[in-house]
Length: 331
Image 1 (tube, rainbow, N blue to C red):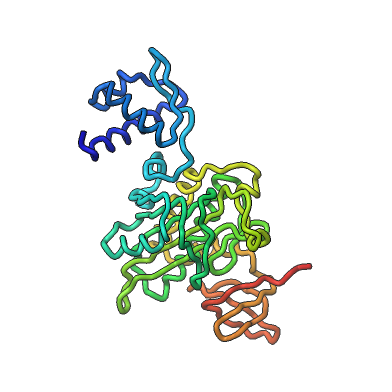
Image 2 (tube, helix red, strand yellow):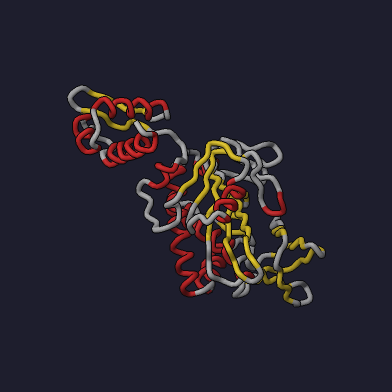
């Protein structure tokens, strides 16, 4: 059988099993609906078992899914995905150097807006300023989203803040947990880092070709390397139970898409208002470590362009475009 045809039949078979989840569907019915032999159905069932699906077979009843592998595959992500564009094209990998690098290449080659690259593991995952991001096969979500907004280059950093809001809302939708945002690109819970966001621009002169949003989420990690355990956390550590990664990714993609469409139509004002409600640093004393030195003061909010406002002891308000933010201890 042609490999692409076999792949299509297997995808349709999975859809049938998912649609009848919790109940049996007969091999005869599946063969009729998919226009293939019952022998072909059996072969595809065996292939799915090899991929980690636990499928129960009962004579005269048929097959049903008992459990499915915890993997962020193209099929898993796209099944029941409620978005129009975000995540409708998926490039999934078991192990990869960096989803960001592959997404940049795909964008250069003309990939559609909303395409995502997702991996179970990154061997060279990174955050801002080329810092390494721990991306081992321990149950995280590592993905990059390709955007092609018709906005001015100087507005591109706003998409980092938009992404943080979408992620916080997606996590809340699935887990009920309330997260906070630390300017410009961290999502925290109980003061520890849960999510990192890396925004990279592909542009020519004054025109954006694409914006690649790289997102790393600590989901089901039970522990972290010693050097990270005091500053990083995961949803599992916060809830003491596993979170279904596919459902979480789907919720985040939906929140991101809705915010993005609103942003393109109405501008940054709504995103700004939402961002400030989730911001952990507003009204608090912070240190902003910039390339030109450290500025201390009270975080007053962000401008309409997404720039951080910091008021020092003399009352002077500084506009912070790029910095590492340290929130003063309350002890």
